[in-house]
Every structure is written in C-alpha cells, then in structure tokens.
Length: 376
Image (cartoon, rainbow, N blue to C red; front, side, top):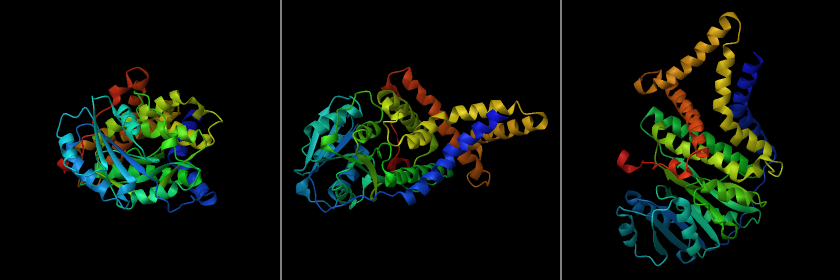
C-alpha cells in the first residue's frame, strides 16, 4: 500500500503539484527582463533537408519581419537536399540571403556550418516549417539589452486542427509552454523553443554531430555559464497541427535527447545547477513517469480483497481505452476521454522508447516530421 501511495503521489506531483508550485513562485519571485531599443545585427540560420514545400512561406515571413534589412542576414543551409529546395531559395533576389549546400550530415552539422558563415551578434535559429510573426525579431532583440540574458525563445503557436487528437496535442503543447514561460519568469527555462530561438554569438559552442537537441544543448551550456534562458511572449511563430502518431516520433527523439543531455552535461544533476529542484521536478521527473506508473500497477496487486481488483481494473481500463481510441468515432462523447488517454500513453511510450539512445547511434532517432499544408 505504501509503494502505491508513494508512486501515485510522485505522479500527481510531477503532473500537477509542481506546476501549481511553479505558478505560485512565478507570481512571488518574478525577475523582469531589462529591454532596450538597440537593433544588433542578426544572422538567421535556417537548416533544411528537403523542405521545398515550406521554403517560400518561410522566407517570405523572414523578409516580412519588422527589422532593418541592413542589419539582417539570412543563411539557408541545404543539408543534402534532393528536392527543389535550393532552386526555390535562389528565386529570392535578396543580397541578405545566402545559400550554403552541404552533403546530408544532420541538423547539428548544418547549424555549425551556418554559424561559421554568420557575422551577426545574435544568431536566430529557426526551422523551415514555421512562419514568423512580423514583430517577433524586434521584440526578441530588445531582450538582449539585459546582460544576464543569453538565449531568447519565441512562442510556438500550434494552429487548430480538425480532430480531437490534434486538439489534445495542441493542449499538451500549451501546458508545456506555460511551464516554460513560468520558469523563464523566475530565472530560466531548460533549453529553448527548438524551431525559433536566438542566442548571443559569443555563447555559441560547436554542436556535437550526434546531438539530438541543439535547442537544449546550446542553451544549457549558456545557462551553466550563468546566463538566463527566457521566453519572449510577444515573439511568435505558427506551427501546423500534429496528430499523436506523428508527435510520437518527435517525442522519442526529444525524450531520448533528454537522456543524452544528462549524460553529456551531468552537472545538471548536481548543486551546480542553480535550478536543481526545478530540473528534478520537471525534466527528470517526466522521465520517471512510466516507471512510476508500472510500479503503481504492480503495487495494486498487493492490496487486500476487492481493493486490489478495483485498482487493477481501473488502471487496465485506462490503458485499454487508450489503445482503442483509434476505433472511437470523433462525434462520440467517449472520445473526450479516450483521446487524452491515448495522448498520455503515447507520451509515456515515447519516454521508454527514448532510452534506445543509450544503445543505438543517436541519429537513428531522427525521423522526418511529415506535417504541413499538404496534409490538410
């Protein structure tokens, strides 16, 4: 009984207790960012592998930014593209735009290549799929007037989908974004918003070729040097809706990347991490959830009499409902329960699958996230 209660308590703490405590701390210990009006030279780095269907919208959104063109350079690194990506980039007649072609080597190498060419004081890392809102870069640049700020993330706004599954993924992302914003308010988030973040050029360190999360590795090296990693809510980029099936592959990589980060930067698990409690409650706690759930189910068999049957049946029913979600029609009320259950179980499964990064080459966890306008 004690094991069951401990596991249940830990699960409740990670999912709800810690966010509640974080929200309270953010209200009491907010650290404002000192913003300015200077406009540093910014190098926009866009790594892309076969992103032809997104190129035009992406570059149009970049050149529509409310930022002086003379203080902006855009570097597209074509990472072994075999589609029309490079041809589409060349159509943009703009002196600020530079195209670099490299053999297919992966995102870390593409970023390293782009940064080596960059001349800006600020590096804006952004993926090919998301469109940037016009005011985003100016509001991000203003944050770097604060000498304590090393990395500024934008906010990823997921568009509304047409299915319950897409709505659940969107809700999950809003939950994650809220936690990141609150961490930013008290000090720093743990990483950055991968498709859209800026970092001081002086803080860039070459990325290992096999690193899975550049958006965690780079920011956390800055964090360990004493800098803040913040979110700028006014800087926004839009993302296409995503189903749990497609999100699964991405989460396997990101959760596998979290294991990898802890191995590469073990200092994060020590008192040298000034936000150790937050890191253990949030990042490390999330990785423990599948094992806590497994132990809780096993402990249910140890209860006396009918309690064991009730607890086991309730948990098995939850997992069966998640497994059968794809068979439940969208208009049935049960879908409001089965779909969130499926999303939660998918995230737990991705956490377990991410462990394979310890046994296989990290790049095998990279899967193309095939979403976008052609899917709608």
